[in-house]
Length: 298
Image 1 (tube, rainbow, N blue to C red):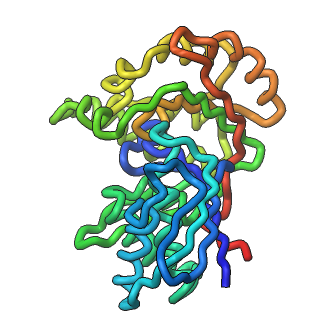
Image 2 (spheres, rainbow, N blue to C red; image 1 turned 90 degrees about the horizontal axis):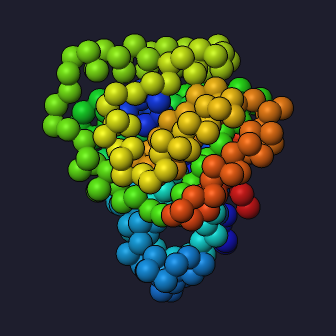
Image 3 (cartoon, helix red, strand yellow; image 1 turned 60 degrees about the vertical axis):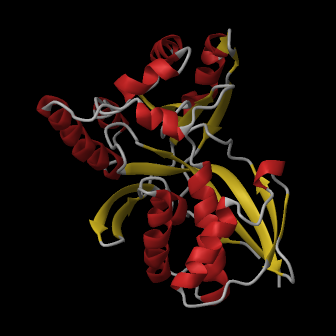
């Protein structure tokens, strides 16, 4: 039997929610797999077409969690999520691999997804990307300790549109992590805490103005923006074009802006010149939120 799983892109470290808040986006990786005599991986870049890629490692760990012997798989990957751009490509691979094990030996029920989150977050190291990749929507997530995680999911208003401004260069997560300071001033922590609470309320109340007011950050963006050529110019152009809010997606380098559906195409036209950068042309994707998360399509 051949299975088809679809995992969404995600934007984590959303606004003030460092390692905590994220949302799922309507950009997807598709995974087609079936049990085989030997593992074979096709459809992706050569360096990732390996039985030891992140999908397969996650699959085997999830099988171990379910007390099942991991079978060999024939896996074909159709990836639309760009690598190392802060759009959750790793989380999509992890969610796909864990989801493959649960598709074969358990289910993708809500209860099973809670177990999937524990496994996926342990592999990823934090839950802010894998939670929306599994559950969809806007997710606030924490570690409860002892390899257990908790998340709460909220639907994202259907009329909001997210503008992924994707540079023509990568930013390795390790480099972005190294840019962060070892400690923070109390006023910076309080700045983020208040906004993290407020931005969650803004999504639940479908209040885009409140979302924009709460979308500030002093924990990671001030330290990582200098790693991104064009940050100042592109973010200024976003504000001039009327973005309701903007943030550094994940560890970067993608910049995410948000507005309403009716203004999405005009925003894209106004951003065109600003994205013609010396380092290359930035890609501009207009995305709705994904409400379903990881799902199986037969």
